[in-house]
Image 1 (cartoon, helix red, strand yellow):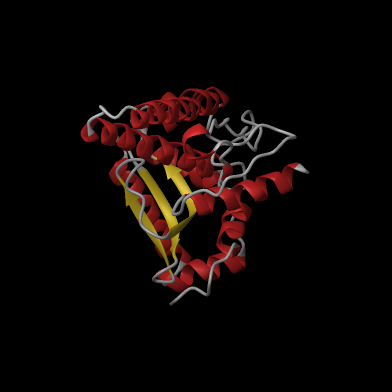
Image 2: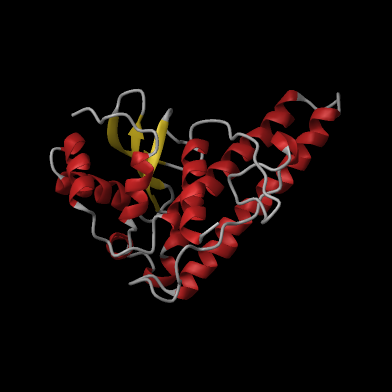
Length: 244
């Protein structure tokens, strides 16, 4: 499978995984990417998806930052999620495991799952020129009045999270048929029945190495490197017409 086709397949899988259980899949040709299940709910062992861009060539985001983010934060979340599945299986098979102990493991699973999927989406929507096409700009303007109004709100949410933690997500709400920007305090506060289209990591590990506490400069760099083709593909995957 060609690289572009592989990325398109993965983007579809992770978008669906954001709001629904992931259907079991496996591949004999290559390791299962993060977000694809091989072994079911208790046996899945995920592998990080390689960066879809040359980390030496992004504008305003250093190779050192990107590699550290990918390996330590994203890779660490994948490893933790793999370990949690084994712990959950053991705890469930032990009749003496208190429900509150089991639920503590489930909470950790929720957090790590959110981290893995959101990081998958984040890296996949980087590596572009930062310029959105006219058709996509029009669709976004349908919900926000103008494209600039959307961008102003997205940036403002990010600035509000700067110095702390969280995510900013432009998502398509399937129930409301609206494009909306969502504030997320952590990996577990994803809105219900929403397909994520554009994801921005506002945890300090995403920018502090390059910008210290200057979150606004990181947001500028993020916008410079958005891969808008990926955003457009996510919007096209099973999305009904947007409500104005």
